[in-house]
Image 1 (cartoon, rainbow, N blue to C red):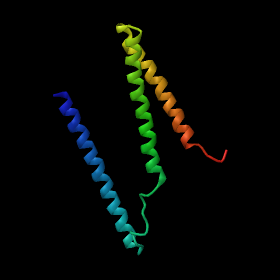
Image 2 (tube, rainbow, N blue to C red):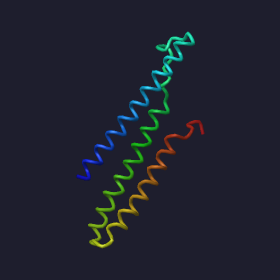
Image 3 (cartoon, rainbow, N blue to C red):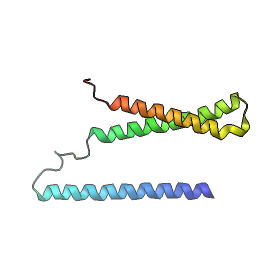
Length: 112
């Protein structure tokens, strides 16, 4: 029951975000047309920032997932069932930090 509520809330939030984006996009296109500009020549959503945000979010989420899996594996290897939470927390923090460093390395200026 709880998972059904979570999935429906997640679906509803994505639908609301999509509708908000579509509404604002059509509003901006109408403003361009009113000013006499051709909206097909100007694509206001083609920026490298959007792609990079998804890349960085993917790297961070991958670091969190590797941290959780690594924490469970470490707890199983060291045979400490009572300290599983601590291993998961520690490895998640470490792997998330490494993924943040990776994001910084990818986003830094290449001319240095």
